[in-house]
Amino acid sequence: FDLPRLKAMFGESFCPWDPRVRDVLQLALFHFDRVGNPPENFKLSTVAAYFRFDTTGAHGALADARMCAQIHHHLQERV
Image (cartoon, rainbow, N blue to C red):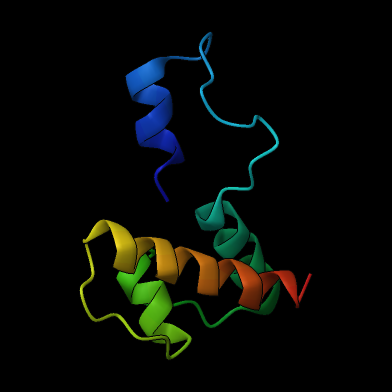
């Protein structure tokens, strides 16, 4: 969910992360494009709540990282 912000900060020519990273937002978009019935929006906490993951502390670094990991693992199982 933060990949667009990282690219905006660092630009396309400098890549401080592994370029093979999978953007969890893209994974969620692809998933709902396939199965339909998407959440009301694609904010991290909304997608996490859609899958019934704990959203306590949303917008905090640790909580957001946990939600991203849970969503990623959940969707990877369905790919």
